[in-house]
Length: 599
Image (cartoon, rainbow, N blue to C red; front, top):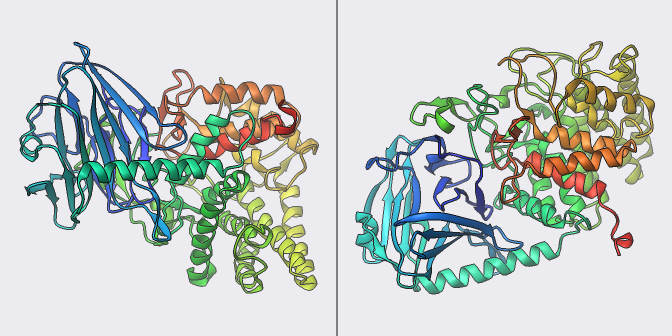
């Protein structure tokens, strides 16, 4: 039976992210960035404990292991794993990536700190540090000094600084843990203080930073712990250096078993971005929101001919060339493993609305440093003009179909949203003539969608203009402001989606076959959209019941992947999925009783 699972904990700091399995093994971490080369990649390569040549992992193993417990420190991404042996011995592993204020800026180095201390008995441990390189193809060579080990490949060097026996780690010999050891894995830089003292200081300051950050959040009365964990996860998926927010920290976790639906999600989708911005705005996480908005503005300003692609690299890179690597067999052996994402080449017309919807916050949110910027509005108008040109032309759509194009209703609605928001911004800036012009363009697009996106016989909007199929993106029509919550057409659409796309407790993206056949697992965010739509049309009891079901799908740490098996409730797809955590936040905020009525 496979030991690989998505019952993982995420630790990180905005520079590095690592996934830790239930027994404290780091199974995934990339360097020097979250979209870089996987130094630890046993998540995508099944490891035989008896194979002396296995590599791509960082484990702390307890002799005579019996069982493990694992939890996060409250209101932090600091993960604590306790390993117990059969004789009452116990060790505790504390994993974190430093993040705190230093010299007037956020200090978030490329570093994972692992503190291991004895809790009970006379435990014997083995530390195995076997980082990989070249997409898991080779094991890094090692050199060592008196208090460090250097792991070298052709492009990067990692240094493990520790107060443990260097020989015991190099030789992977068991030793009795008498008190504690500290393991600091990071760039090839000397640590000038004692490892234990540095580790303790970094831990204390990191815990304090995260708890201060959580205290600044505006959270709903109900589901507070669930929302806090989701918010911390969004922050971990935000790249501190550039402001980009990645879809997930992994690549090629299949959407369902042996499906071939294996994609690299370590990039920034503009469509996901505007939903993340809405969630951050609801929570009051303005600094993260502002940094992402800066990223979006830079993308728009640098686009050739004001044409946007759906996804960009974390520094704004346009080319994300997709390739299959043979060196990693895949999650539970289910390849292929892909690096890069071909979606960057696709035509998806909703991106213009996504960019403008995100940027709209800059004009209306007085908490932000930059507001009321007419020069930015003039640049956004160029994106709006593209939206007008393409609003009813065929594209790959929100679901990124690789084998067909169609005139997607959601893409048209997002182009409408681009014009609608530009009209509102123009009004806010006192530009009456531009307001009228953009309102007239929005009205033209609306009339087209009303005429061709509504199917009277079905009593629902449809996924394509003049079509008869449905997809889950139609659940967002009210959220985008295209229809009112009490519009009979929206109520009919919500009910039609529930009838045709619901399988058990979950909503599927669409009902037809795609490039890979018929989907067998549910895309989690679609059910969150359905919950939100039920709530706005007045079916709050039904929405709350379904929301509770979704919360039960989270792993032990409150984290969600991209997909779920509708029967077993097992999670599939890339992890941790930003979309899913955003859906959780949005529904909790929508459904919670107000604070002023809570007591």
